[in-house]
Image (cartoon, rainbow, N blue to C red):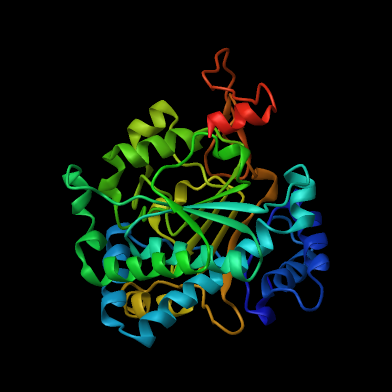
Length: 367
């Protein structure tokens, strides 16, 4: 536990060497996450745990975050979003863009292109802002897929954020900023996205829009991403996950649920995130934590890990790079725990796609 660093991390025994070399590769100018991991790796503790997260009820968290967003206006609202974005980008840089980690656990592939899935929600606003920073600050090739509930999808209007003009107006402005930054925006996830993008970021408002799970648009995205070998990062809570229980029973039975490798919770971890079985789990958004959870923490006597925009923009709750892309192949079970679970099976319904030719005329016709 890096107490003097302001960062708490969990470093499994077999992952301690990875944490050490990742911290060293970041150098003295690296993120606080790297410095904290360096301290944890020196501790010599088996399965060192710096902070045991206390999860917040999903419905209570959604209401608290929406209330905090509505209470802020102008520069305060911008600061609220920027705080979440800064923590998300810092966590992504240290985990999913870390060459040392990916050399060991992702065949050396460092994402150079990103596709972000977003919807009119607080999570979607943060996701669009993250996309802009990844393009303008890190020079990545970024595209956006916008999922907006239509009038025919009446159940999606139960989403509290979608009903709020404050959120929808901010989301519209965020999309306009993305366009001005040169980011392409579409409303369909390409079926061949694996050939063009190395990283998928899910900012579909899983916490705020649980009822949108029934829409065909997010269902098709979930099916496409359930078996992809591309890295998946979710913001706040994965799409179609319940704020209390995680993936729905139907999605579990058909094995068509989002299986993120990376999760960054905004302000505080939600109870539905207990099902997270990926590699990296962070908490980010100091301003969101102060605005939405300070009073709640006192009322319910919760011990929340303290965030600070200047010194600790994000805190790592789980660091398991050996779990990257786990749960996608036949027999691999995506579930929380210290050990990876494998269930033997004889059948695999996964559709495998590959290019049959590199003829320019054929590719033009396909496009």
